[in-house]
Figure 1 (cartoon, rainbow, N blue to C red):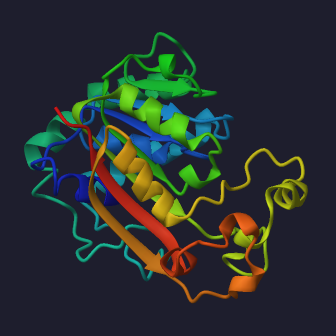
Figure 2: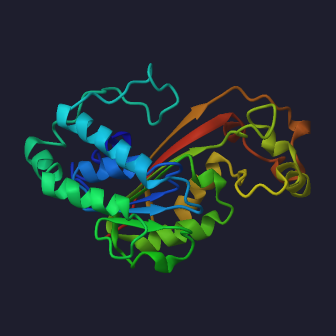
Amino acid sequence: MRHLLFLTRFNGYKIPARVAEIGPGDSIGVGLAALLSGSENYFALEAIKYWDNERNLRIFDELISLFQKRERIPGNDEYPLLRPILDDHSFPDSILTKQVLEASLNPDRLERIRVELRNSDSVKNEIIHIKVPWHGEDIIIPHACDFIFSHAVLQHIDEIDAAFSSMDHWLKPGGYVSHIIDYKSLGFTKTWNGQWTFADWEWKIMVGGRKFSINRKPHSFYIDLFKMSNIELLYVAKETLPNQLKRDQLAKKYCNISEDDLNTSVGFFVGRKPE
């Protein structure tokens, strides 16, 4: 809902038809919410399959109930870490109109989705498409997606330039992206931005054999990445925390990092591929 509300500020309040999520994690609940909002197809792009079909079925039924009741979007008092922050948590009736919901919640359509959830890995699926692992441009046909989003995932991708290239490849002209990126050390260091005090070789030892650490790219890196890509940056916002580092603590690689980057803990981006 949060990604949809921001997206519709820029796309004329349209429901994206084909949606791809990078890194859904332990459930595809956000993708299911997209389908219940009227999206026709959902692509789940993950490195390792963390979820199970039964859990997704339970989440699906819970979401159906929330949509049928037009429940409010959970507020920041209930989920203080959820981003982006909204000013209004009302059910978005102006976007998810009665006509939209009648079609998206049609019993026959819901049953089709349930069947595919029970067989989520089937290549015969027409609505839900699981791509594990997701690396490689050929996993989605070119220019197929109307909307690609991620939620605190891109900071875990080392080959982030290649990921942006893939998004450009999958995104149709006029399509949109929405990404929330967490720049904190995520428990790897005592200070929230301590990851910038380690040389590359030290960081490699620090993370050991863990497959998913963080790429240590700061906020300005992603702004520059958008500028160099074929995806126009429409909106950028950030959250900050007090910098806990002194300049002489920074690794040589990061000695020229800006004060702005040293204080930026979360970034939120919305972009569009030109037509």
